[in-house]
Image (cartoon, rainbow, N blue to C red):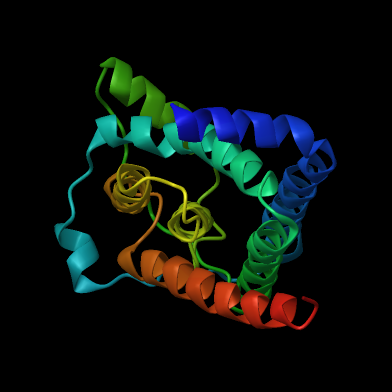
Length: 213
């Protein structure tokens, strides 16, 4: 509770940092939809591995796939409320990672053939809706996995964050990664790409920010 009170107080006292999540969201949408528009008439490639054929469709994992949007929003607000160096490093890493993703989206447009959802359960309905609103492109690297891993990177660097919070964020990031392949929205290599780019971008951002201390 003490940590939560500090977080809420910090969020209130650092209102000018609330602009960072808004800019991050705008950049994310620009990258995602901009790449889709620019590559819509180009050939798209599947990056399937043998392992991908063995991963089953698990329709209820769509709950994790959608839950992440709430967790992302709260975590990005949390990181924006930190001290300048920490906040700027986090959001600079986010910008760099998305820029790298944009370049890859444009160079190697990717896609996936998703299964037909024929069931009539609630989860089947949600899966069909997911497929209808999210086109099967811009897959490598996975933005879902990248952003979830950024959340883990940010939280693990906060000293006052309790261990259970860091472990919880790690488990959440792993769950999101699993959800991307069990909903057949991504393939395994997309997960690796998202995590690796997030880690590299964070290191680059750290070096850039450290020069301005």
